[in-house]
Image (cartoon, rainbow, N blue to C red):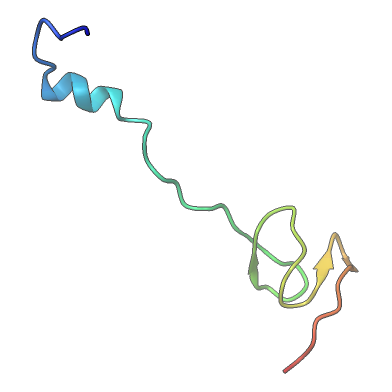
Length: 60
């Protein structure tokens, strides 16, 4: 089994890990009800997508 010849420095180790992070999900505002929704998805609160109603939402 291979063994490292030199110790990996903290700087080199951390540079390798720079892309390993979580990003916040992107959100947009619904033009009908001004609620926050995922882009390219139907709005959960009013049920519209691209200006037309695609799902029926029960009002509580």
